[in-house]
Length: 613
Image 1 (spheres, one colour):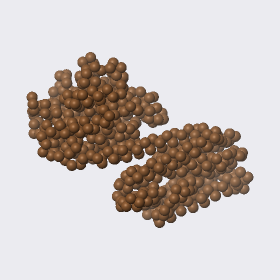
Image 2 (spheres, helix red, strand yellow):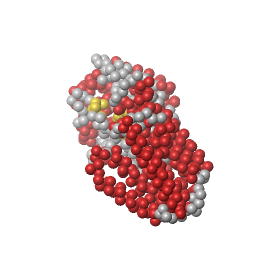
Image 3 (tube, helix red, strand yellow):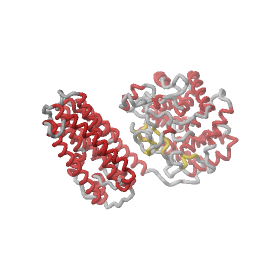
């Protein structure tokens, strides 16, 4: 449960509940909602200052600000509901006092538990979760006072109880590492300690404890508990006719189930990565290096296709299989396997079978059709060309309504970043277009647009952590035509080589480490254009790649794919990228190593072909 979602819930709470109070004045209800938000902010500020008591002197201004806001809220409530001498006010303020005491007692009890690191039962945890949200119930009593009629008070309070317990289960998972760092004792920490003790494991590293939270099954069980409470709350909301609240809760239930699915993917990814070789096998010949890489790829073509990367959309399938297929088909490697792969892929290009079509997946699917049999379905071509914009560039998506529906995004969240043309998408499309004669007009428009980007020094990657990706694919596309001046090609190659380390490799900017993926792309560029002028650099790269193949035939991977938020037009402006397989503004790795390994095998085969000529 993100803080943004909780904030949205509290802002919408009065509109969610107002259906139970048909005679209430809307203007008064809205003012009550504003008072509630102000009071919540006071409590959040004070609670934060208590947690950071060692910095209290630095936060005096915040404390006084909270006091002033508190005084303002109380005055507004008195004007709205009346004071303790009035009939309606007396009941409200009496109930408000009870709720405040419950909240304070809960907070103090939570602090005591945290300091002593006492054992927490599930019942203790849920009582704490509800007690911390006690003040929220004051809204119900406020609405009751304004309505001056009996409403289903106990049912509404029960709904709020279930909601806040659901919130807390998810919060404690998402804040697990942060809570440990800030010495906050939480229920999942208790459960994890019990698990580690039962299994005679001694783990002190926070990052490893965080992994065990998921590998132990604790996180999944807590998400299931959250789903249970969302369902209970939704059923009660439906029962008393609060349908907007019911819809919100069903949506949050779906989000929790989606999160549970991500956890399952994360566990699968972790288990898969643990089986990969970490040992380098040096001194192999070029022929054996390629052979071992092909063996790894063949062994990992599960069920006749490849998967790699793990994102909120699941495992990459059509995109991955098509990309790998194009790499291998270029040198007529494992042709029978590639026919099997193509026959199993979707008829429309998409990341996998469960998501909408995108440009890159379609680009490489078309490239695979062209490479294997030279016959591309007309409907696939027609759908692909919709991703090309009037200026010749290519966008990842083109249908805004479909994209919003797929991502469940409101209209106030921009999706322009994913609908705009980007060099890395255009470069891949240009390379595939170069092999399709009857699409020469589209190829020329794309090439011209890429030339403009090179000349304006604005050829940048959007979906990749290094510009090497877009630079290399652009150069490869340029090499297929005489229309691009040699000076442009040379300029592009020089910008690629400028990033090469003297030992022959290229780094991944996201972690500063040597990257086999970007190194293979750099090798392709040098072999493709003016290769004879760069023999020493090429040989250094070949040597580095041969010495960094692992014993299972693969090459190690890193977080090379980045997923900007839908409103991000320029990824360089994103201040923080998360190392995560899920969500946006995140960096993901090709954990199965097939994406990187196929790129390296292809580059080595390029070099092998070059030296044989």
